[in-house]
Length: 262
Length: 262
DNA sequence: TCCTCTTTTCGTACGTTGTACCGAAATGAG
DNA sequence: CTCATTTCGGTACAACGTACGAAAAGAGGA
Image 1: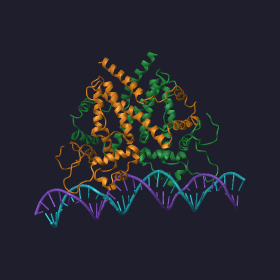
Image 2: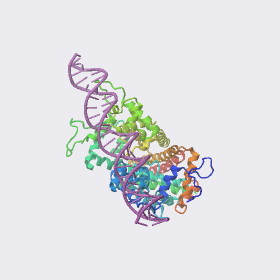
Image 3: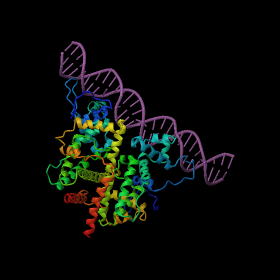
Image 4: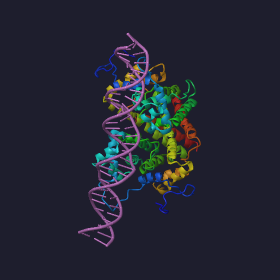
């Protein structure tokens, strides 16, 4: 956008906006569409091709399976050719995440908060099921990518006029996000462990049960044992359904209290 | 429990407990202390030495800095010697996690739930600050290690007699866990990004602000913009303090309602 | 048409990783 | 002393991300 000043980097004591090359480059990659070059040899691929191939690979093998060489092979292209479309592996993953978040079917503005928030959670849940590698990205924080922010915008919009303060809204959404991620993580964990052992579901569980038989010490973990016996650890039919409803109940309490106290 | 039958692996159609070598080996590593060998050459190190060296490395460089060669170098030992103490890198990380969780100062049984849960959350928070790499482990699920289960036992014990059902207790603790992890992730994200750019705090934020100036579209993200202007994204003094208190408030509501309805 | 400039393609190469393999060295048991 | 057992660690291999630079391909200007 602002394109005055040819200098890329400005002296740090300048009061103007400082643009660090590294940060700028990474963000530009996500926000500026690749400008079509009119000169020179024509590219045989598009950036989207590379991103999609990467997603396909990661979908079935996790992030470990996402090597530049393998992506290139999937596209019938030399490994180093990828660097024409993508600066490096890290940035490829950024682009993959953005692309994946674009799949979300987000609730529209003005919908009642509870079904909307439920839809938001379900959509995220399904996204993590389709693309488990999203949860494998170091993900200290989701990248500042357009479609990621779209999701956040939609999530915040659901709650912003329901009563709680702005900061509470941010916190509530963050709790929902982390809740869904946590649930998705353990669900994926079981899938992955099961298929890595090559056992079917029953065999896997009886195999895991050897742990309880051999090492679990009831005296050391009495509470866990008690909860286990009462079925507190049993997976309900839908992992999300029941527990999400209870989380929404608790959010409803918070919202009601915010409404009454105002 | 049932410990007859010396066989390690049983045919899958057997109704007895099935022990998969892979799973068993990994769990044995965590639960069976390394038996001191009386024959042969004496070891110059202990498994604990290796684990501690690994933790030291990961503490300051993240999991990426944890290579077998570097751990070995830190111990003045050949790289391959590590494999005497640890089956491989993955298992070393398991042991590191267990060791880290042993640092937790968990609330004692019988304490009132609210301060106890607050202590639990703070302890986890501080653990993640000391050892950010814990959140970097793929962590589909925390490993079934003794000290990890100690933490879970303590967490569940806090809530198990306060009114909610067993399953609700599990869900509440899971929300707290994921809440703290999420907060820790973003806190660490900022630290890491800051130090990777080599900027001080102010320079970093003005640098990031170039994003808002160059790309952030107020019309695309009106809610985020509004919340931003109202300070909803501002970090409070203590990242945990205020938001944890609000989470505990909402848990208190749930507990009260469970009590009243029983 | 030919030249030139720009852009893509990709083979080669370097450094780093986890770890399989195997011989050498050390040590307690008999 | 002998020998079985264990630790030690060098070498080697496959796989990784990617820097470099030469080759190829196509568009614009002559």
